[in-house]
Amino acid sequence: MELVIAPADELAVLAADAVESLLRAKPDAVLGLATGSSPLAVYGELARRHAESGLSFASATGFMLDEYVGIAADHPERYRNVIEREIASPVGWPSRQVHGPDGSAADLPAACAAYEKAIVDAGGVDLQLLGIGTDGHIAFNEPGSSLASRTRIKTLTSQTRQDNARFFGGDVEQVPRHCLTQGLGTIMAARHLVLLATGRGKAEAVHQLVEGPVSALWPATVMQLHPHATVLVDEGAASRLQLADYYRETYASKPSWQGL
Image 1 (cartoon, rainbow, N blue to C red):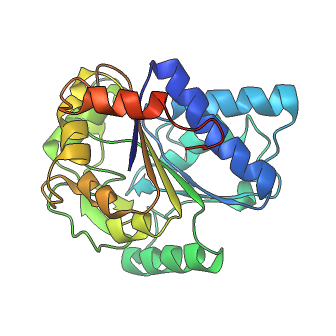
Image 2: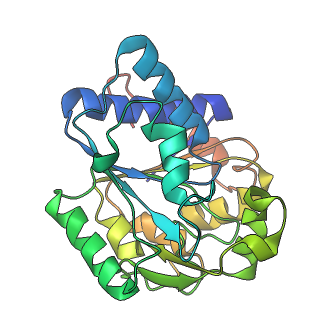
């Protein structure tokens, strides 16, 4: 696992660099798309590069991490609509090539199985963008999730619903109670994981992710077992790290030819 500590705007550039390098080398790459606040600056940077230097998503495929269950199709916070608004539309990404779990399906277990199959049929995810919750969840794999879990329905914790209430006008009762989410096993099958976290509110979760024991209590810690995981954090999110100085030294001295 590589840990990079830098200002938030630099983190977005680094993540966008990783996506651009992949797309330049493999135009038909499969990208894993996160929602929430963490990836927004990355999406903005990718949109800028699309507009200014022609970075193309025309042949790429995207798979979303998760989706609320029972949310209206036209709701602005339905994750399919968020992804369309924040990244797909700004970069001219054909909607038919961006996929998400169907939170309105009549048969949710079947929809989850179909989503898993679609990812496999696409060749698997090349680069997966991730955020992390204050309780250590990635995607909507709440504490207690199986480290081998696959796409399934989950009940959101009160903490996650409170954290997400800001997207629903501050009203926690408007936040759905259930979601479909890629499992930890699904996420771990991606070839490169890139997680972003900013602010002191994420400091304990980042500390557990990087330096704590692998445990279902902090689901993101499963990333310690991944062969190519990158964690990008600002000073606030890094404030609980015991080895922060070592991470800074390591990144400062890394070879110029070596990317994330």
